[in-house]
Every structure is written in C-alpha cells, then in structure tokens.
Image (cartoon, rainbow, N blue to C red; front, side):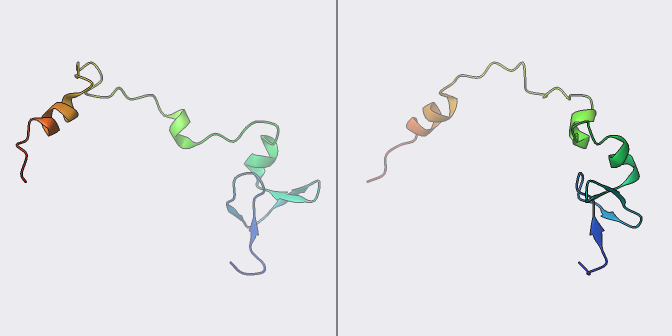
Length: 73
C-alpha cells in the first residue's frame, strides 16, 4: 500500500476519488449508504438448500462404525 492510496472507511476498497465525511474517506456508493449496514455478497444471494438436508442420519452413525472395527492389540 502506497502513501497516496486511500482506503474506504466503510468497505475497505482502495479509492481514486474519495468523498470525505467527518474526516473519513468514503467511496461514492458508501457515502450514499453511510447510514445503512454493510452487507456481504453472500447475504444477497438466495439461500441454497443442502442436498442432504432431508436425509435421516443416525446421530451415532460414525461412532457405530468406529466401534464395529475389530480391536488390534
């Protein structure tokens, strides 16, 4: 990061033409939405259903498989 590079106080992106509000640099979009919370891209994407969501699984399936192994002295 060079000395001239300015980072947005809201989203952290480097800025070429910052908008200064209360002594802090913001991008144009962040300056417009300064009162709103910053959302991640994953929160805007529709929720995906897990393929194995409805699969009925025994809670101790892994433990039963482990205990079924023969003991080796």
